[in-house]
Image 1: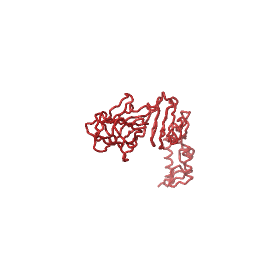
Image 2: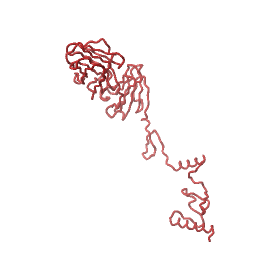
Image 3: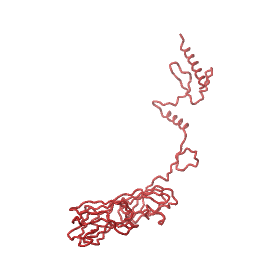
Image 4: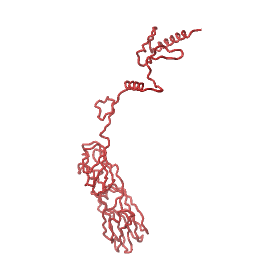
Length: 350
């Protein structure tokens, strides 16, 4: 029977032969090994025993069940020393071979509070302007499109005053915002979001809201009420128009200001009259310089809401943002008939 020492010697010889044939190393008979100086291999004080016991010269970089602080520091140093270094910078790299990551911080969005007019050229490429116009109108003058590649701006009116908050292009004769010379916000919390291409500014989004008429013009018919009576729904105030004999039976124009686009006329009210009487909702067309029929207003026994949808409001908005909505009685009027309006509004983007 062989002794343990003989078995270990035989095992060592077998391992040497296998390593020589695989060309992994050349282990001399003296017991020395060129793996002692190769960091890819784990170094042992002596050979492994038949029982699998190993004695290391250097503790291998392997996970530990309960590593201490020194062990973790050593591992970090090893990883840091054998890993490629990548730098994150806010300056564009000049060498295309650099492995750095470049973050264009000029595109970082900024929120700016304004109480007076300013130029967008002094602010980042992406910017939100929160404008308090309580002390006077606030105008944000836009960059010259020829000098910029891409800008993205948000505008919001934060105060309750009647003062306007506006975007104004650099050159009014050649640069526009969706075909408009300017974009103005008139009510608190109204917003607009714009971007530019090489030629123009474009509206991406605007806050939809209902806007009541600034004034009323009653050409035919009689009323003792005021425009404020149809500016707030459900407040108990009604704008009443008494129909008159003749054609038209009444002619009432609701005049809106500060409009950019709208997609709906909203009416809450009632026409107390015979159904054969034709009452039409009309919009003034600034292109054809005449009123267009939008829809017939029905005869109803009580107050009801009605909506008239507008596909393209472009021809119905003047260059200064005016819109005229008209209630027009086309047939011969009857003095016993009346029009009652609780609320008239445009669903619009300002």
